[in-house]
Each structure stands twice: as C-alpha cells, then as structure tokens.
Image (tube, rainbow over all chains, first blue to last red; front, top):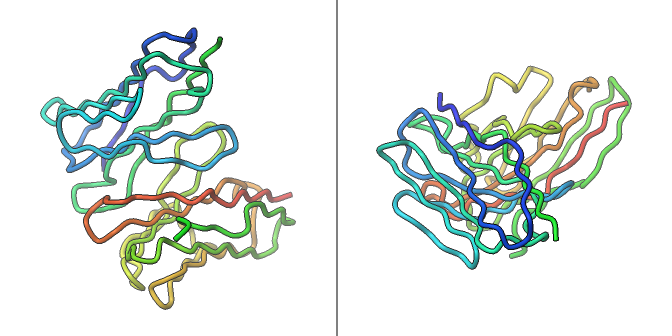
Length: 110
Length: 114
C-alpha cells in the first residue's frame, strides 16, 4: 500500500508570496493528483501528472518519479487561494483508487 | 453533462437508522469510487466499481456498509444501523477507462449521526 506524506501541514502567507507544497510517496506510481478543497466544499482536481511539469494559470505542479516527490507551487498568491491542498496517488500499483495525503491548509491574507 | 452528482447533500439521522446515498457519475465514465472523509483528514478509499462489478473494497467497508452499481451507471451506498462514528463526508468520484483520466469528484454527502 502506498503512503503519502505532505508538508507543511499548515501554511500562512501574505498576498503575493510564492507558495510551495510538497508531497512524497512510497510506492512507484503512474500518475499523481493535486486537488483543492475549500472549507465545507467538494474536491476539485487541479492537476494529474505523470512526469515533468504542468502549469495552469498561477499554479505549477512538478513531479520527480525517480525521487517519488511532487511539488505544487502557487505564484503571486491571493486570499482566494486559501484552501486545503491534497496530494493523491494510486492506492497500490495494481489499483486505480486513490490514497490521499492529509492535506496542507493554506491561508493567504491580504 | 454536469459532472458527478451526489444526493442528498446533507443527511442527519438517528443512531441505528439505515441511510442510503446516491451517486450519478459522468455518463461516459465506467469507473466509480466511494471515499469517506472525516474532519481534518484526507479522504479514505471505501470501494471501487468498474461498470457494474465491485472490484475493490477497503477494510473500512464493514458489513454494515454495502454499495451497488446495478446497471453500471449510478451507484448507491447504504449504511445499516448507523453509529456516531459513521458521521463523515461521503465522496463519490468517477473516471474514464484510461487510468485516472478525467478523475472527477462529486460535492459529497455529509452524514451526521445523532
């Protein structure tokens, strides 16, 4: 079974700061998800990536398959980015269900 | 297609009662997943369907829990004899045949057992 570790657990930032959230996992995978959850809200998929880097607006996700590590970056952070960011990887090498990290709670103040 | 729909959004029930939740996946997705999320934790996998076949079940899915997907479209999750520890957000997700492609979550059903 895969294990997923996220850091930091909590993150506070001032508007405009560059944010980095890290995710490490224990078992080789084919793809990794970054997800966003607002308080009381559903989960929105931000990225699914299997190699290299993806960019969407101010969000950038990178993955290093050999090192079993991924990062989510937010450039020019804004209060509306305040949410829980969750990393998720396959449950095991055979399965397609996901196992989730505990999430990073980001709070951006103006 | 409006994404993954879950019904109801909220459910309050008395301990010992049975509850049933419904999930309607994206129509072209043949894979459907149920997860449970408790406060402050990431979601935990419960079970997975490919079409109508239930292919994986977590040990979290006790014998009081049952999930079905009778025609390979919508799915139901039933909890019998609810306990206070069952209070959580129950999330449904669906994806296409290509592994992880188009993985989409519903908004969840929040269950409160009193």
